[in-house]
Length: 106
Image 1 (spheres, rainbow, N blue to C red):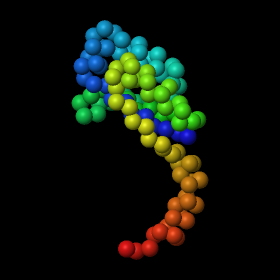
Image 2 (cartoon, helix red, strand yellow):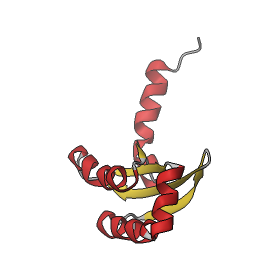
Image 3 (tube, rainbow, N blue to C red):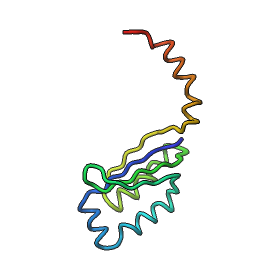
Image 4 (cartoon, rainbow, N blue to C red):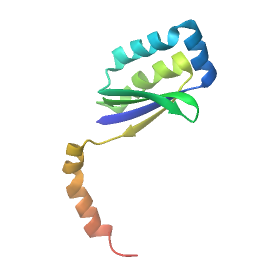
């Protein structure tokens, strides 16, 4: 299943990692293990953040994706299942069925 994961590094932990030179090297090491389809870095509510798109075969992989960020940076991590346009196309019959069954006016 395609997943989007957002991680946010607390300011002080990020500052310390930046000061020691560990920020970039640690992120690079995590990315080499994670192998995301896409990775974007930004700020969220004033903290360093990253957004990663990757394929998760099974929910048992959550610790493998999240723990490196928890352990290295004390980061907050959130997972979101996401769809590509192709996935959405495959899901449209389910949408149409829901509309027929539950889409009456209220």
